[in-house]
Structure formats: C-alpha cells, structure tokens
Length: 100
Image (cartoon, helix red, strand yellow):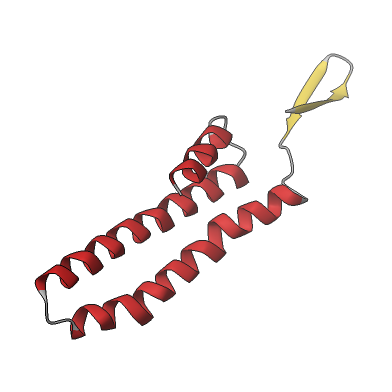
C-alpha cells in the first residue's frame, strides 16, 4: 500500500486503485464469465436436460451444469478478491485460471 505523509510524523494508508488491465480482468472474472456461463446453462443445458430420454445423458448434463456453475462461482470470487485488493487474491486468481 502507498503511504503518504499527512503531517510531520503521521502517515495514512491510501487504498490502492484497480485500473488498466487489472480492471479489465476483474470485470471479466466478476461479470462476463459468470453471466455467459449461467446464460448457457439456462438456455441450452437445462432444456437439453429436460428433453433427454437416456440416463447417461442426464448424468452427463448434470455433471456439466455442476462443473460450470462451480467455475462461474470461483470466477466471481476471484474477480471480487482482485478488485478488493486482498492479500491472497493473486494466488486465488492463479488457482482459478489453472482449474479453468
């Protein structure tokens, strides 16, 4: 964190700003990927699940929905942590990207 002198001998901590490519990454992780994942699940996967007639297809689509909903949640959490400039945010974002 950047510290600026307030007066002689007194320091205040200013929160770091999120900007540039980090802001773009935060927006993608927080808004874009979860929204597109949930849109695809609700517009394609659930109708295919309702219309399927075999047990193996139901299991496959259910696993698909669980995995991609989990990835959407992890993406949202990684974006929020990066945006809030948490100490473990970069490590969490790296883990999310490896899992993805």
